[in-house]
Length: 376
Image 1 (tube, rainbow, N blue to C red):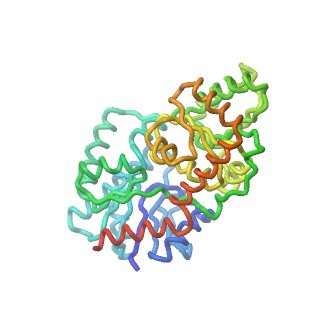
Image 2: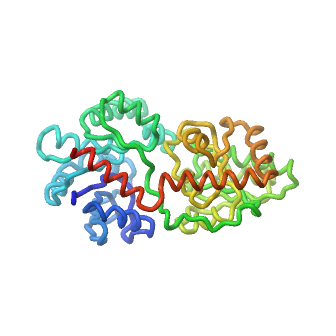
Image 3: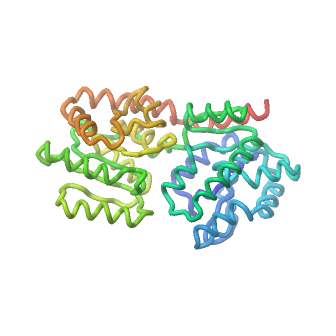
């Protein structure tokens, strides 16, 4: 079997979550698996289904990223050489810089895959407060161009966006979603009788949570306050979270409950207890939450943006509304709750699409296809 390394800043815990264990357990049938990540304590742990090397994680966000992206080359070189890594999968084109340099200098020989989960720079600029923004954009563009030109394969999550990269850099590509734990997210719901409206995701401006709160208030006033809005997610932007809370308080909006980031099984339970998932994102790659909700037979209402309009609306399970359009959001929600047949049809279409994207064994099969493309 080939030795496959996942390289990036994904914060895997010292004790693997059940979802992470299930992902690596599925892939371990076809690969010897390694992860190179960061944690507070630098250590190397054999998790049986995967070996994870944790570099030291610094408290300062900027220092941590500068080290991992630019000054980590000797540690990474030593690890890849000692473990005889065959395939390196870099989380994004910036993470791919060190592997690309080692390949260009002919110091090591491995196949390089760059993951493309949407416009990572757009995500970063909308999620973090960055200094020297123009310089960051310029440098990121140059690095991305360099790494994409020199990689072996681009693994995307969205067909149209990945095709643009394929044409630009003349690279082979593979398109499939990020891992979704189909053993945790499964349908056990009573959503045809539920009045719960659910949001799952970080409470940040890009996710449009404040818009959803205002739209829910508008919807409630027209529907006798019969519904509950449950907001599940982390709060990396404290100021924005407080703005959401202040709006609810000042306008005396009932039936809204916040939950912090929950474990996958707890999120699945919320999905199975809800009628519909709502989103208001202004940008997405291929939202994993829509696949998770689909596995729970939970329909959704989301913005008409790339990554959502296809495949989630075109193949079913998701109703669309124009971004920031309260009237369209409310109208769709009213139609959904008034028509049981629509609810059932959307639920079934959501499930069928998610099964095709992330059913049992699909993730492993997609990675085996990548291996075949790299070594054909």
